Length: 83
Image (cartoon, rainbow, N blue to C red; front, side):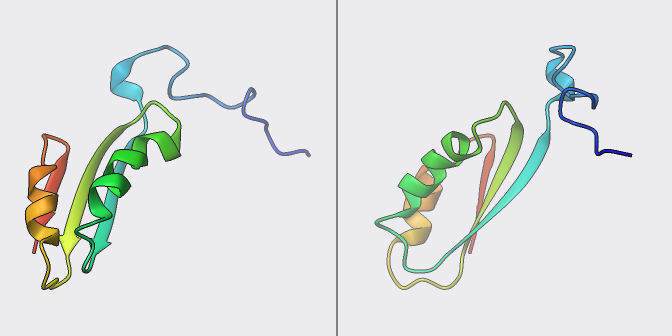
């Protein structure tokens, strides 16, 4: 018996129903990342290259720089920031 291919399996996007999009929870742990965190967060949708519903949790792991402040500036309804 062969493995099913993508066309043989039921795709959550097959009926184009937005409620059936894949849901992701993405954790980004940052430490002294004030110069890179914005670029990382902005590139997540590009890197996944799929239509998805996601929440991004940014966790500042005790940085002494402005990682927390920069992360908070990126906050949207899909992004939460913790220190």
